[in-house]
Image (cartoon, rainbow over all chains, first blue to last red):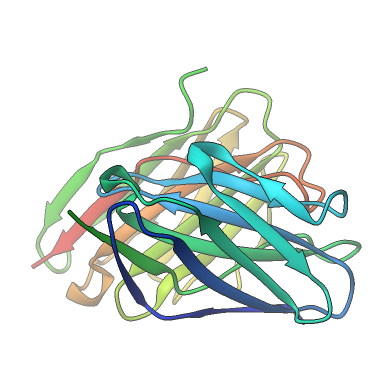
Length: 114
Length: 115
């Protein structure tokens, strides 16, 4: 069975500071991993995905995530936060060879202070 | 492409009334998903379809909820009768040839308020 844990329901950073959003997963087979972003009053949008190619994945808006099998982690980072990054971020996992239906984490709200 | 289109964006209704939410997936996508989002429970998968056929409805909370997909370009989620605890944001999402590594494309959701 697959599961996702996002550590911290809220993360607060200053504009220009490093953004780090944590995601740990559980999967009995090699996973596919995703980060989605949700802006207020909108649906979720794909930020980036890991599909067993490079372990460091680059996404839109300067975000990237690193797949670490030994730590079962897929943390999302951005070197310098911008006010427009304030949103809800969701990590999701689906199992290759399984039902493929993704399991979503509870989400982390990113707050950016001027 | 216009993306996944949901209507209405907002729905306010009284307890006991029937509510119908609508979704038009992205053309050519084989899979369609209905999710519900609340502060308490996060994002919950209610039901999903493959080629217009319901595959798994185990997430549908109770018999008051029903979903249909009469053709590849239209799906509905119906609640009858509605209750205040159904208040949530309901999302529709579609995916192309879902093989686990295909992302979901979400609509902007319908915010349902049942008074």
